[in-house]
Length: 499
Image (cartoon, rainbow, N blue to C red; front, side, top):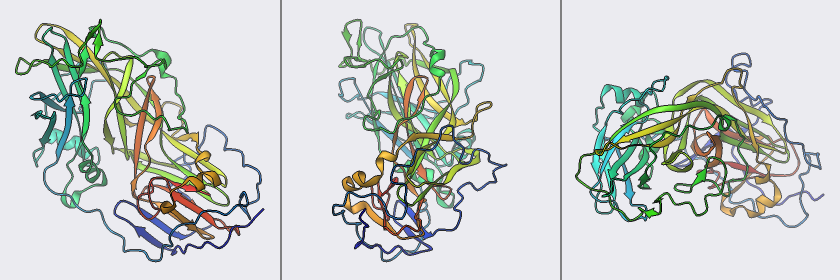
């Protein structure tokens, strides 16, 4: 076994390395780096697991880490100084949301009315139907783009939604129209408005203002009978470590897992509506909605890694701090991720894990309540059609369920092979008894965060002072190498990988 030497990266202890988009806490490790801020009795799920820890690979000795004997890549540039910690920059001015609507073939949808409604408007638990409140409307430009600026002072109900969601007002932007033959054409986008400003600025509000516009295509909606998800789809399913084919916007998936090759949402009874322009300036269709089903699904919100002599920690503390991909469908069978919705509401619980390792890496899951919502559209000819969305609502522990649990084993992202493939600019090094903690920035998108009513949902988690990933080096004689998944350790690494 060959010891690794000749590469040194000095990490200052008890300092914080701060970049524009991330804060990396660096320091000497203590005997116990507990992540959960509450006692075990107060938060029994901290570090709990529904599956055994991965088996430690051979060799098990931590004094020298495994290597193939060949020359190893450089650890990367030395961090020689730490800038002063920065505070969250306040934002100002009224929030603006925006997007783009197109026909099914991608041609711009011009002159169309886009209606904005609040996502967080309460839907009755008994499944009764409501007419959503209109926040405002916008008209698409020649290129299909639209924008809407909210008033600087919101109505009290909207302000309450935003306050309860960490300063973010989540909105559904919808188009409802008809082709010349009466076929209903619909499209929905989901956007976040960062309405907390000035000294009240929140991380969520600032992040919402930086979101890019989504492009959403309209499609024919001809279902006149409501589709209800089968009870079999309520069975919980784990995430997967393989995100190479993660679901993306407008990539279709079926609830029963069958292939969507050849599926076109624009072809109905042999008629292709992809280039059909809806009638503009005619009486609008009237929307309403209700909950078909709601259920708790365990959802992966982050991960932590520990190779060689290190230990890993992850915390998700007190507040939901994630942005979900929203799944939408016009037939209840084929779904795509359309836009994103932020959830920043209080959970009332601190959950996480600490001191796991070495040779250990897993995702972390929390229980989230989801709703399958039926969106009904009544148009002038008297036709009522149905489209659907799957939305996260809140952190919700199911009766008798765990407050949190472990998800997929992600050790394949660590180790020598992964290190060789990593971007040299993203590499750094931990010396003995030092640690690095991500306390700001956005984690990697988890493409398979949960399967909800048979539909795969994606998710991003934003790190904060109480939502973090931590890696702590032990006293092994070999150096410990780390690297960011999508950026420098002193920038926005997303996830810290380990070798």
